[in-house]
Length: 232
Ligand SMILES: Nc1ncnc2c1ncn2[C@@H]1O[C@H](COP(=O)(O)OP(=O)(O)OP(=O)(O)O)[C@@H](O)[C@H]1O
Ligand SMILES: [Mg+2]
Image 1: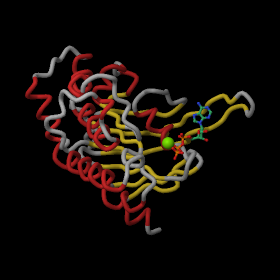
Image 2 (image 1 turned 180 degrees about the horizontal axis):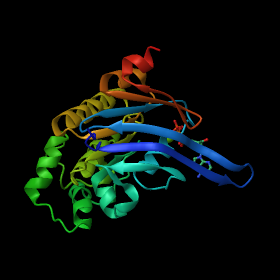
Image 3 (image 1 turned 90 degrees about the vertical axis):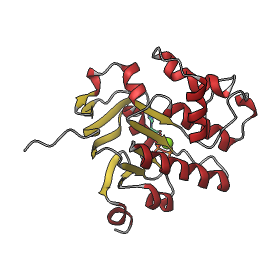
């Protein structure tokens, strides 16, 4: 029987770039994974392993040079980039919020797609990330942890099917780190959001991941459940 399509699937995903001095350089080689709804894939590996390179392909900021990416069984290249970025949200290490109010930031994504969020919808998103009452705050006045919560709310405003997280807690102090990790774990659980979560913390990997992709030098060293990959 044919399998139903995965939410997100990578097949032999590779990316080679032309380096001015070194010639062709392989950044990513034959990465495969398959994620069902609500699964969290943790991507781990040393600095330079290709973790951010992989996320950039998953958000179509860059294109693979070979291999394939499928969202709900459909090739990425058949999905309009603007639509793809609505369906696949991204939260980075640092929150790059726009100057202006929190509400402006939350409304921005949906507005790009012709959706105008009501005051109550903005409030509900803020409440969801533990930031009730912050709608009219200037983003320049937020702490790192607060700003990260707003960037999570901004990503959720688009109702993404997949969330890409590039070390979302690593720039935060220990207290905000634990809170933001718990928030993300709760969101994934409640909304059954499929998630690709880059982290270099093994303890965090154990807490959040269903599957672990361990990378080095652009290739997969291991792919499997946390116990299998981390205790190998
Ligand atoms: N456009 C590019 N041209 C040449 N090399 C690149 C390019 N983009 C990334 N690289 C190289 O690819 C490798 C992987 O980089 P990447 O940023 O994906 O690593 P990472 O696993 O995210 O590391 P970190 O943990 O430090 O964030 C690095 O050696 C980087 O210098
Ligand atoms: Mg990186």
